Image (tube, rainbow, N blue to C red; front, side, top):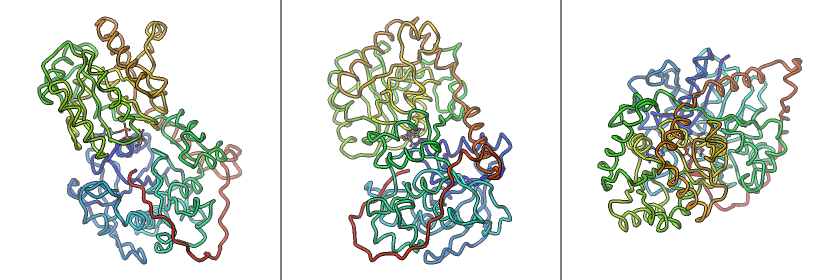
Length: 515
Ligand code: ADP
Ligand code: GLC
């Protein structure tokens, strides 16, 4: 089984969020299952500086975009082959792959991810001097939507699937932009990439992919409803039979409290007392009072509307009336950043906020906190709650998406049957957050019960074994000949007839900014 796995970020080569973690750990797990999987991503300036070595394979002619070099390398610390598309629009910019330093989307994102798609298309069709053609193209999020759309009608192209990591980012651009991309005019249709008069890269990918995976069973159901569908719920309902929820795994080696080089002290289920050393070290590092009794609440993540941080702010003064501390690491929305900094100034020694990206501190917050707060408005899967469970730091979450599928609320019955591992708020508002924090505090103040709760989470297996196996079965299903009966479960994707492009009407310019 040969698979081309196309993605816009891979940890540790480029990361803005969980997509990068999954783009590293899922292919690794598939590789271990014997899949000939090869990764392809853009060669960002920072990526090239993080890689030790690479070779130039070929020069790809990308038409109006000029040419790009195809580089071959290997994932750091693994044997998974990695291809990079080196084009000046990626390789001459440092920092965030989607946004400039002010947080605005790069103005040429449509061009950048179209040329990335064009280059990946050449790999998919064995036109890149590799002498290797995949049996499956696996795309991820909007940045690979155009790729899947380009492959859709080509009889030489392998079947494709897409994984949606976040439906909120769709890669939306105006009509005038579309016309400058040199894409086939026939794609300007609602069953390809047109969506209410705009170009929508994610929709293009969803329409083209034979199967649509998303990263948890709950999110797979939620995105088919108007409340979570981000305007695409109608088309997802139509493709209901092809939409699958597969829960993400984590890298159990990288996120392992027994052997984590970022921590002050290693610990396991049998040496939980060492976790307290990490709390002390975290309090020192973040300038918090050395208070062993206070329940230290950790938070790590992108500061966006998705993560429910506005509700935390609304509840903050009431939360701080309780014996708690707050340690937060994140970055993003300038208003949220400023509001959390103001909260820190109002509660010196009890609230500490660090802005920016800091890999080591993310690990230390997972280990040193007592509880982990994740009140996301929606959460396709969420990895931070899985990391916190593994680190004996019970999560307090809003019960949506992957949070709903991985966190089991604590009450008598779930404590008794060994499933309780955290606290689940059924609503997202100030009373719900206060309820969640108070409930956690109530159990935190009963050390014996707390240890049971920590043990449940730490004993769980969050690895990739089950989900990687399911992806492999999906690849096998997609590569079966049409005469095989099981292949009939896949909806055939109709070819798009050639059409004449009507004259353009400029529409609102509007760009997506994240994976
Ligand atoms: P999302 O992908 O929506 O951002 P996830 O929970 O799936 O949410 O994954 C977030 C990933 O990004 C985790 O690995 C988390 O540790 C990491 N992360 C987020 N913000 C930061 C930050 N400021 N510094 C370090 N790591 C971060
Ligand atoms: C997205 C989602 C997050 C998920 C991650 C990896 O960024 O917001 O919930 O865990 O992708 O799939």
